[in-house]
Image (cartoon, rainbow, N blue to C red; front, top):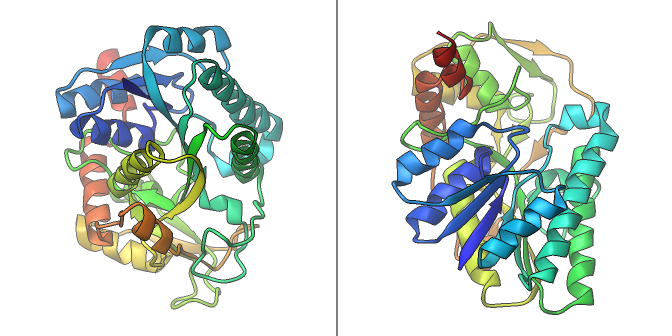
Length: 344
């Protein structure tokens, strides 16, 4: 029996694949490389020295996806695949709604056909929108403020309806806060295409000399230093949270929702200072106007995951920065470095 990982070549998917393999699971990965890289698949094998099956395919290709279920005895699915850039989703909303929602519908239809009723879904704290209070609990009101977040919120509702219609389903919905860091080996990490949208890869690319300086959006928030505060979680802690969620749904039915974060907030300037200490590099930055839709403070209440999953985020912010810097130094151009080497 195997665990199917959709989007397993991506940032969080690749780290989860490593953790599953090292925990003794058999895995099958599918990915279309729309926002990932084939090198990640190779490196998952190098890190673990364990065999697994990989298919390059798009979840919206129903015929090919069904072949995977027909060939393999799939026990459960961890669903990461989807488009994920908030800014791009505002520019291309139809693309995001079509890709993220339709691919999930295809996946769930095939799962039901092959009687695979265990699913861990990769959601996001963006479903909360602008929180009324912090820390944010799983019962906080939802109100995603961009198309990317709304696709996650819609999929959550679809999964809830699906489980109500058929009690065989066991579904875990994981709402991530801000994943950062990389595998300790430095072999897999976050690999954004173009200019990064997220803070940590932007900081690390400034540190390594790829980018001139960091723009800090907003310096007048009601926070410790005027900059935005977020909950940053190590990607390996996040990956291990998926294993805990998987173990739980194998023993129960219905839908459970969990926040995965540290439960602590750090400001942008605190992140910069910590990364400077971890890397020994100065991070030039300049303040810029607030971005539309940004909020002052966002961090998780993790008590439910701590209690029901027996999970907590163990890695601190210094370790997150050190692991990011190790990855960035070893891969200054990300996985595209491989293509540059081949071209030369």
